[in-house]
Structures are given as structure tokens and as C-alpha cells.
Length: 421
Image (cartoon, rainbow, N blue to C red; front, side):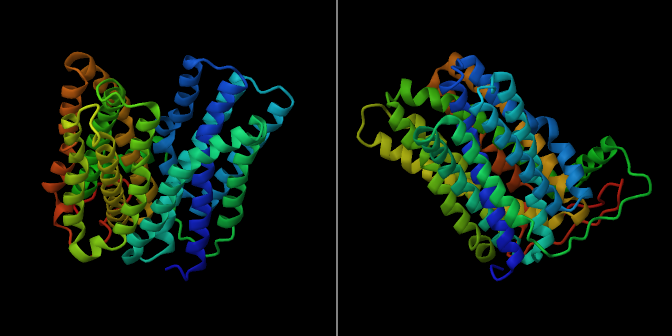
């Protein structure tokens, strides 16, 4: 697979794009704080505006990706993000970049990132054979994990060593590199035939939602993702209160414990390239999800002041990061395998929309649990909720998948699939 020049170009472009995205997530808030003297409320609004496109545009992005060439989508979004950050840097150097403009830039970068992320997932299916999906996803998700680890650190370093406006400009360099790499992809894409008179966007969005809801495997993946994201948001809200208040950890220690999920995710990407093909996709999904999601049940047993508390937290977060990434890569390969080419973008967008859409409610629940029951009991309750995700998978067709991936579900536009994968 790595001998395929087009896959290498996609991997290099996606890696550069992810570095740019995660670097920018730190640079823009630091610019707001250090240059514009933004308070906590303003910083919260900036982060929310940057995240809002996930809910607002994911389903629409899926429609566009299914109707356009993924290479075109990725190239245009790279160019757009580079221009947005470059323009912001020029405005900052001229002293004309205020908070309202920064909000517009954050929303634009976030919106274009939504389109890019949906497109690169769909593009893999059009570039490699279906029996190479797990290895391809392992490579792409491994680079994304590396960007999640290195991007924030790099962004902070750029702001510290350079002026904030120059740091903003440097973030655009990664999107330029991604643009240059992806535009060199030469393999023709087979774009689904469009019906006479393009249907309304709302109809095509509904078609994607009905497709996911009508297939047993995809519906399970969607519901398991929603349960995981909802419970994880609740867990992390209580977790971030529990570590400093109950375990009396310093900010540095909390950061060290959380940072362990990054190397764990890299390890999980490597495992995903081998384990499903050896033990079966279903076994890997259920076992990895059960163990990975269950590790947070051990956190309430830890007590502050113990010499083993911080090492134990690092180990638990490492295991969580590794097994969660193993599940993510395997689930993505299964979803791509059972989804027809003409539905790849909308299936990915629908699952992202449903999964991430419940995260804010989970955060609210986590705060309520901590306030009502205390952080130790609240964390135990929220962590128990995470086991709903592997339970859903264990009782569904994905749990019975073997070493090879299934084929696409038979599908005709504007009709429901007739059977589960």
C-alpha cells in the first residue's frame, strides 16, 4: 500500500492538515489571551464558535463529499484555511485583528476542517482496495493521533518563540503543504452519477440518515458512538474536577496524566493494523471497547497522596488511549467497507453528527453528577455509563465479524437498505 504514490500523497497531506488544525486550536486562543486580553468568557465563546461547525455543517459536508471528488474538496479546504489564517496574520500585523474578526476566522477554519475530515475518510475508499482499509485507516489515524499530541505543543512553542501574529501565519504553512501534496494525487475518482435535476440538500441529508438508520451494522456503530461520546463527556467533566480536588494533583500532574492518552493512541493505531486480521474484527471491537471504556471504573479507587496515584493514572490513560484508538480505526474500516461509494460522505457525517451532538449534554450531566453525588461517586456512575457502548456492539452483527471485512450493503438512491451487513 505504501508503494502507492497517491496513498502517500494523501497521508502526507492529511498529516500536514491535522498538524495545522491542532496547532491552530492552540494559536488562536493564545492570540486572543495574549494580544487581545480576552477573559475566560471570551475565550469560551471563541472555542465554542470554532467547534460549532461540527454540529452545523457535518451533514451538509457529507452531501457535498458524496457529490464531488474528494481531492477537490480537500484541496479547496486547504486553500481556504491557508488564506483565512494568512489574512488574519496580516490583519494582526497591521493592528486590525480584533475579537469579532478572530471569531470569524475561527468559525471559517472550523467549518473548512469539517469538510476536509469527512472528505479524507471517504477518499481512502476510493484510493485503496477494501481489504486494505484497516491498514490505511491505521496509517491515517496514527498521523492524526501524532498531530493531536504534537500540534498543541508546537502551537504553544510558536506563540512563545515568535510573535503571536507570526505564529498565526505559521499555522497556514501546514495547510499549504497539505494543498501541495493532495493536489498531486492523480488517480481518477468515480463520482456517483447524479440524478437529473440535483435533489434538494435536505433530501440528500435525509437519505444519508435513513441509510445509516436502516442498516443494522451502521445503526449500531452510530448508537455506540453516541453512547461513547455522551458518557466520555460526562466522565471527563467529573474527571477534571476529581483529579485536583479529590486526588490533590497539581496542574502539571493532571497534564501529565492526560497526555498519556496520546502515546496510547499511537500504539492503538499500530495494533489496529494487525489485531483485526488475526483475531477477527468483531472480537477486537468488543474486547477493546470493554476494557478501554472500563478502565475509568478504577479511578475512584485511587486516593490522593499515594505514591502510586500518578503512575496509575498515566497507565490507565495509556490503556484508554490505545484501546479507544484500536476501536476507532476498526469501526471506521467496518463502516467504510459496508457503505457504498456514493454514500461514504453522508454515512461518515451522520455518525459524526449523532456522536458529537450528544457530547455537550454529557458534559452537563457530568457537572450535575459531580455536584449532586460528589466527584468520586459521580465518576463511578459516569464511567459505568461508558460500558453501554461495548454492550451495544456485543449484541449486534459487528460482534460477529471475522478476519475479513464484509462487502457494501446493496443500496439504491432514496430507498432504504434491505438488510443489515
